[in-house]
Amino acid sequence: MQYLRTSDLAKAVGVHPNTVRRYVDWGLLPPVEHSPSGYRRFTQRHLDCLRLARQVYCNQYPGKAIHQSGIRIIQATVSGDLGGALELAYSHLTLAQSERTQADVAAGLHERWAFGTPADATIQPLQIGQVAHLLGVTIDILRNWDRNGLIDVPRDPSNGYRRYGAREISRLRVIRMLSRAGYSLSAILRMLIQLDRGEKTDLRRALDTPRPDEDVYLASDRWISTLTDQEQRAHTIIALVEEIIQKQTTGNC
Image 1: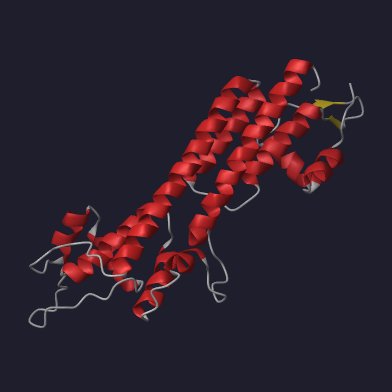
Image 2 (image 1 turned 90 degrees about the horizontal axis):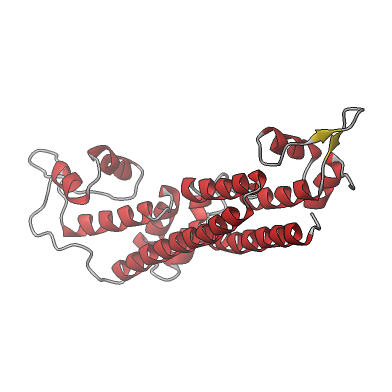
């Protein structure tokens, strides 16, 4: 059998040798034999698992569900359950596509709302506790959205309490749907700032494009691009697992 060195695996996938060592320690690669002199002896199977793991770990954190789905594929492959890994890979693709659809639907709602389609028909103004109950969120979440500039709620001049009318509740419904679809508050605020300036075109682009002054951003700050990348990676993962199965069945692993 032809053995590979740590540096061989690292060079093949474009990572530092320490990354390969960490993947071994984390159980992302199969157990590794050692030579009499103590060096690790990697095989083609290790390289295949490393290529697979890099598709899961190569980019920003894509959210808990997608990340855990990817880890389950790696675990099944490392354990030798290649048929199970392939099933999980197709489920992973379905998950990425579902997340992308949800993000697109939420973006579509906010675009329709921005161009005048009402998102609520409340007649009498409501207080914050009533709005929290109506929307199924906590009072703290509503206050947090207010503090972070996502909404400016008028107050009752007689007592100083916030008064939520149809306009405010419509805006909150859009914020809630975008948030639940995976968009970060930074992305939502970026879009709302543009909208409040009267700029209604390219709102979806604003959701997906951090400003130059946003020095640090998460995957959810450019969520549509992240999910598009995850869907492409899911197709690559399926192809890699199928390739590993092919090697196993032909004795080329």
